[in-house]
Image 1 (spheres, one colour):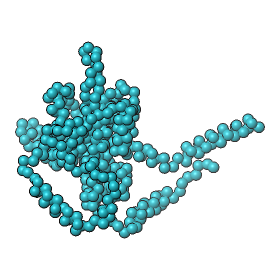
Image 2: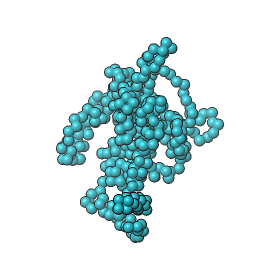
Image 3: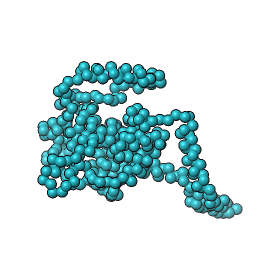
Image 4: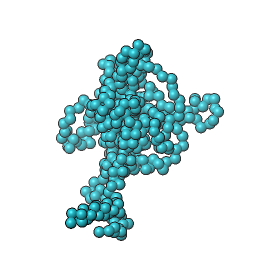
Amino acid sequence: MGYVAVKGGTKAIEASKKRLKYERLKDGEIIEIKTILSSMKALVDQVMSEASFYSPFLAALAIKQAEGSMEEAVFLMRAHRSTLPRLYYSQTVETESMFVKRRISASFKDIPGGQMLGATYDYTHRLLDFELAKENTVDNHQWLQAYKQELQDVSREDDIQYFPKVVDYLREEGLFEEYEDDNTSPMDITKESIQFPTPRSARLQTLTRGQTGAVTSLGYASLRGYGQVHPTVGEVRVGDLPIYVDHPTENNENAEDNDFYIGEITVSEVESFVPVSIKNDRHDEELEFEIGYGVCYGQNETKAIAMSILDQCLEHPEFDFPTHSEEFVLLHIDSVESTGFISHLKLPHYVTFQSKLDSIRQVKKGATSNES
């Protein structure tokens, strides 16, 4: 059998697209964008993180269009992102200015400002709540009113909303090495191709937009033995960061007083303390700590922790483990790249496959002739 050209491809594709729409509409139900935004926050945050595009509304729209498929929603968001003009870069964001909603430390029981548990599934029972199948707007409204009243009863005007970094107190004790600020402009991997070795800014950007499952999986691989990086989480914080852009007027002495506030973004930030052995001046082994860093859009703590593990791994390429290889890690965690390459196997490969079949037939035919 030789290669047969496919005819009628356009009609078949149009029919497939209509069938796709039919499958979405056939039950007569329509999910509203506002419903996705209010009830699927974790999914919206994950799509924004992997798309490296902060827009909850567009992320919810992509989720609706993709019928809940993460890989398709991220693909849609990245495609739309590529069409948008890039008018300016924001100023450097200092996370000390975060309006904190959640803040915990696994390293210390008591931290300055205290632990703030916030909203998390960490302390819930992993049991199906069958009451959710029967919930209604009336009961939900009553619960919300009671909870808001409870918050008013316990709120205080002097509540702290901005918290210092845990690591800063350890630096003051001389327990962590201090570094001078590196004001080199970060590499933008959406405009420049990655070249190895990469600067840390490119590694962090690739990690933060990496596929959540892939980043978590590789972080777990390192944690359980492939590199054996076992950090202690110094601090996890989730909150809102204000974003400013420079005043457009050049050579304006008062430009910094006229910075433009353009909004805020919700992020998860993690600083992990990784124990490492070094040799001192006397060539004796000493224990020190290095910091692994992770940050991503929305409340996405597991990914941020895994990112902090891989960040520290990639700072040490001298170790012979896959999780310490820039090329292995950075080229295999991108959701669009990996999904696209796997999915391309569904596309026609008639010519190459027929060529392989012909080669096998010739080998089999030759073997049969020799046996005769």
